[in-house]
Length: 444
Ligand SMILES: C[S@@+](CC[C@H](N)C(=O)[O-])C[C@H]1O[C@@H](n2cnc3c(N)ncnc32)[C@H](O)[C@@H]1O
Image (cartoon, rainbow, N blue to C red):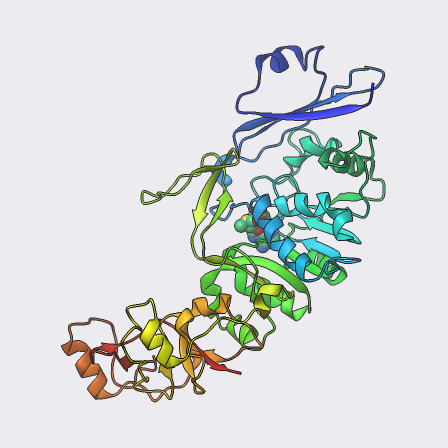
């Protein structure tokens, strides 16, 4: 009989395991109650000899009330889809590279899971993952990966530490014919060519320890805390790293980010732009009153987050596909949009350029500056267009007194005054309009 190692997840711990410590039929390696997702994991290890090994894991679970709202976990399928787009463009993009996931607890991170399970396929040299100490799931992975020497010594509740995992090799260690997470668990436990050690500090991506690991890495892939996105991306750029990270769509307009996009040093990823991504959330996550999207996907509790996208500096095919465009007169004749069909393209009142309210209505034959919505960036191909700026950071002539007067006379109530720097124009019906932020572009 081959060695077997199984694990199951239950909403409720079956009575047999509680009463019989695993029971003779299914020997228990470890059991853990993951309070975040309110489920029990049971790890069962059956050896060739049929000797029963029962190791009760120490489930030092942090109180659920410590959970933070940024505990949103990316789903495996979303990571897979995005990474595959880079591989499609360049199958060797990860070959021989060190990938670092620096906001990831391996117990819950599908980034770790994806890269460890695809380690060979991608040709990775190394995978580094660091967890963050204040994370509500810090160290719950103890049960998953067995004993940790640093914690075995401690009395009572183990010290909650941030950890560093370094994977150098993966293989089917237990000869069961497939490589999977149980092999990783065993390799980590035995520390054979792979490392699992505590960090001295809390695993903050800005700490010296994590920066040292960042320096050793080639590509960073994760979903960092949105609240620290500015600092996070700046650090990656400062250390000249390749990256694929998730952020809020609004981050496009940050003064730390937009200049990078303009300079073609950062661009939008290949999938899921502004669609609203579903992230796994803890079981006690409370939905807002207005939430009316799916609450469960693939058997886990999820919450849809609108306006998110991937940010990257790794090439993918979609950014080299030109956007199909019609001439200005064809747009006016045939456009499916009521804002365009039979209308004119308005000239800005305080800037030398035209307003293009919809990305698919960019005219192919206009040589001047065009203002387009920021969602254009998902369709942006550097061969086709040049990005000149963002209206927020562009010096206009300022709004005229006539425009401001006409604006209020038309019954609109925005806070503008003479000299206001936002772009403005009169539409086809001569109505004064102050559009939302625009990316200023030109055809190449
Ligand atoms: C949005 S969650 C995403 C988790 C995981 N990367 C994923 O996508 O499934 C952000 C994670 O960053 C961790 N975190 C928060 N502040 C951090 C910091 N300063 N340094 C490193 N990690 C941090 C949080 O504990 C949280 O797990």
